[in-house]
Length: 247
Image (cartoon, rainbow, N blue to C red; front, side):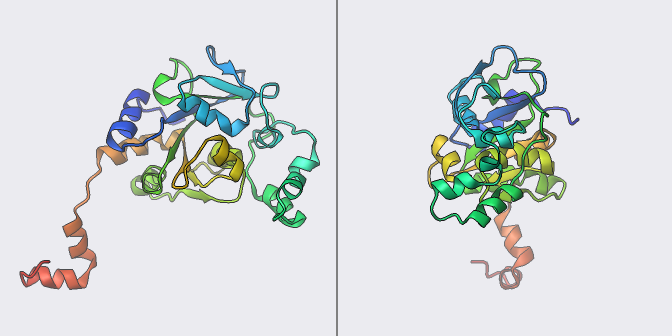
């Protein structure tokens, strides 16, 4: 398992250097129950992001939650069964979904392996207690910062991030990074955006533990030379530069 960078330092880079507007959140897959000091919340699973942004250390599990869809995508037996897993709820609640499209939505969405975790916990990135493992970094950001943060691994090891549109937010931001072993940027579904109060210009970025060091490396090495970039890719600019006619 990849060692974690210093979380306080990572938070500093994101907030002070990258100027993210919303508080970065650390998420933990809990196999043996929630960490000490984390409180249960009866909210939709994706809503733990906003709760942690507000400075809380919280968790959802089989007994503390308010969304059967989140239960399903976190690897817990969802009730009422096939109505959730086959997408019937989508057709009944949203008139634009056909039954076949709803089934395809659930079939193509990611879910954690059944029983892998007993709880999903979240806390502000800079307030994770000592000894609590961090499996994901989640930020709500604008597209430019999503490009940079989710793309950190792409500029360090050449691994493009995964873009998600259509799946439930809990699938995209909690399950997809684990299943794909990759960073994810996601628009989120209507509910996920509403419960986390995303503005029209915001999206989710979810970075797995093994990619966190690439975020640090990206910021520490961040430098762009616009003139050099134009010289090496734009024939017209290179000709002008050679003739001493830069504009």
